Image (cartoon, rainbow, N blue to C red; front, side, top):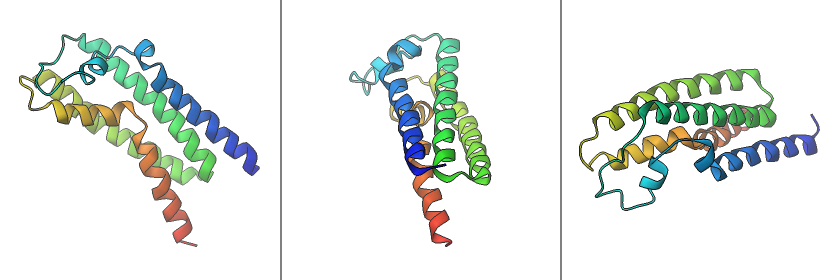
Length: 144
């Protein structure tokens, strides 16, 4: 693939990631969006429809993952990197989703709010892309 097309593809997919973030209020049910904008350290968690919240988290993670894998594919064009990335995304999703569900369901006080904030952040933002791109780049070009 020619370099200008590759760059255009990365910009398009990254733009879709930005659009997911820009329209998160309308695309996903997530009462925690507003909760974490307030003084959440002293407030109890808001009332939530757990099935809708968990479905929204899953849907958002899948959307971010597909776009992130597309970006990784455009940058490296390596099936092994894509397979490894997909396995990592799957593993981290399972671990973080279980942790998120557990924290939300068992949260009694305000002590777990910071942990919930960060676990949720890894599920709803494409942070793994920001970690994997430089790691794969370093690995690929270090081995030359």
